[in-house]
Image (cartoon, rainbow over all chains, first blue to last red; front, side, top):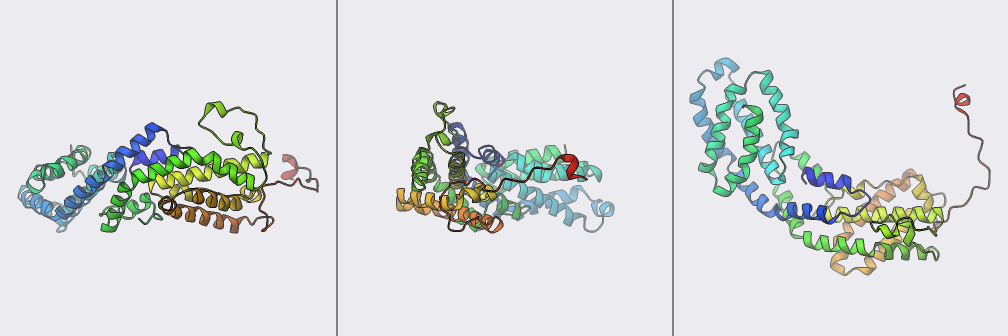
Amino acid sequence: MNSRVAELMQQSEGRYLRPDELKTLHAYVEGIPKRVRLYQVLQAKEQELLDRVMEKFQPMMPNLIRQHGHLAWERCRRDLSMVWRYCCMAMLLNDEDYLRDKLLYWLETILKSFKMRDQCQPAYKLMLDSLTYIFGAEESEMIRPYLLLAKSMLVN
Amino acid sequence: MDDLHSWPERIADREGGYLTPDDLQDLIRYSLSFEERLELYQVLQQQELTWIQKVLQQQGPTPVATALPSSNPAREGAEPSLTPAQRLLARQLAFCLRSLGLSLLLGDPTPVQQVTLGAMEQYLGLPQALAQLRAVVQGSLPADQQGLLAPYWQELQAVCATSQAQFPSPSSSRSEAEVDLPTVPPERALTLAEMFV
């Protein structure tokens, strides 16, 4: 259930939904099977995507371990995986607010406070660039807006 | 579909991970059953007045049309012809039926779980009236629609049972929505000053 449907649920307590509200709900529900199918593909190929990103990102950051310790690459991959999974859930829910509220506002603060935004920037660009290598056009187009949102809030 | 898990809860449980294959199957099943749910939702909306009227008639012959909160402005402002207790009961029944409908439509038990039955509703005989309403509604629907609605009725009655444990009915055999006037005059209310002396 996305935030618009949750809002509908709260606002309609004690009454029946109006035709325009039913239309909103119908539009969301109608898209579920396609979103589930794409979500499964995005889930299945997460490792492949991250392998490609890390393979290209590591040579760009030769000093990362010296700067951030021996777990730096592990943490980097974990964070990218986390962003990817929240993006996938947001795509499934058709809900950018989910991504903002559950992850981005928090992670944005962390990256700012550790002054990591510039260092992380190439990783998000690599993720976006890798989409079409790993996924079909439909999957890429459906997930791209969420990755762009993440990139714009976290590293731009 | 396992209707008794709310979607916000399932999504919160999987935060930072992926929904399980079972969750995804449930989501698809919900989506595929939406037209059926919508159709039944509209039946509930159309039949609400008739069904609640039947329940109140089982409790004593009374017109109910003016008691329900309505989306029809023509009915608003009409002179009520029910006792205050019957009017409240009819409104509570409508509220429950609408929560039931919303749960059905969203495939999520949260709306019926949010129904709260306090001491007043117990006193009005709402749990008994709800059982009557369930019988009336289910008796009016074909088997497939009954099946679609059944999990939500169970959830609603579970909510009632929990509430009943918290607010035991003044008379367990009571089945009518009559409100008796107290025979002993209430004690005089304390003034604010008296309360804090």
